Length: 294
Image (cartoon, rainbow, N blue to C red; front, side):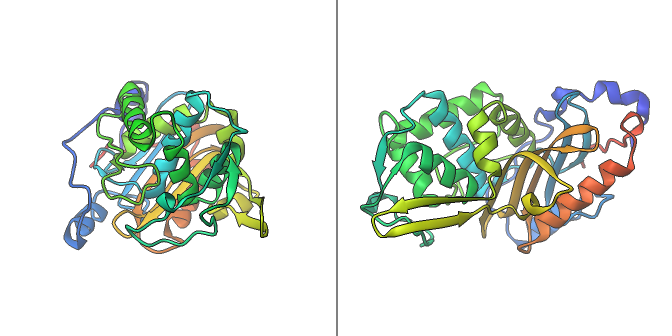
C-alpha cells in the first residue's frame, strides 16, 4: 500500500509501460503465475486496472502492463476508426460469406445476403458483440479490411497504446492483443463518442430482416444492476483471452475506468467488477489505497 502523499504522483504516466510484454496466448502455467500476483482483492482476473478517469489516479493495479489477447474488446477500436472516418451511418451494407467466421466457427444470426445500415452494424458490434457485424464494418471501410486494421493500429499508436496490436476487426484472432494500461487509454478515448456511449450500454436492440425481426441483448449483465452507472462498456471472450471486460462507470463520487482481462468462468469478470465497486465505495477518495503493479 502506498502512502497518501504519493497519490499526487500517480498520474496518467502510470498507464505507461512498466515491463516488457508477455506472450499473446499464455498457457496454464503462465496464467497461474499471473493470477498469483499481489492482489489484495483476490480477483479472478489475471489482469486488472482501476483508475479515476478525471484525476487519472490509479486506484488498483494487477499486472497492468502484461500483454494478452483481448478478444471482442477489439470491437471498440473497430467502431472508433469507423466513426472517425465520418462514414455514412445510413449506408446499407450486405452481410456476405466473407463475414463468416471459419477461424473459430462462431455462430451468428446475421445471414449472408441480409442488409443492415452501418449504424445498425455498429450497434450490434458494441452491444451484442456480433462478429459478422464487426467484420462487415471492417470490410466496408474505405480501402477494405486491411485499410481498417491499419488505421486501428495507427490510432492505437496515436493514443500511445504501444503494447497493442490489431490483426482483424472482431477480436477472434489471438493476435489482437493489448495491456490494461493501453486499454484504459482506449476506453477514455472511446467515451468521447456519444454513439459509443449509447450503443454499448443499450440493454437490448432489434433489427429487421427479410425473414422477420431479430432481437439482441447486451452481453454485460451489470447493466441490469441499478447500483451501476455504466457510461461505456465492452465484453470479450475467446478461450485464449478468458473473460474480459472494460468499462467507464460512475462509482460513488468517482468516474472510473475499469479493465479486467483473463477471468476464468462466465461470471467471474462481473464478480470482480462488483468487488471493485464495493472496494471503491468503502474507501474515501482522499485516502484511497493505491496498489503498485506487481
